[in-house]
Length: 84
Image (cartoon, rainbow, N blue to C red):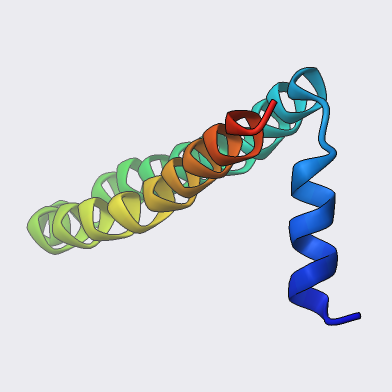
């Protein structure tokens, strides 16, 4: 039995309530990540105000990357509950 087949069988037998709880728990990580990103920008801007532009552009880039993780979790939730 391949790993792909095991994953497909697990996705077919998932409880929609457990999938919702799993997505909720998975959303905690990106939430914490976004908070850390922008708190670092605020701290860096307070220490070196002339670096504000560079810090903000880097922050928005990393914010987008972190939010993609949350969106992937959202899509996986709907895929898992589509069969139910």
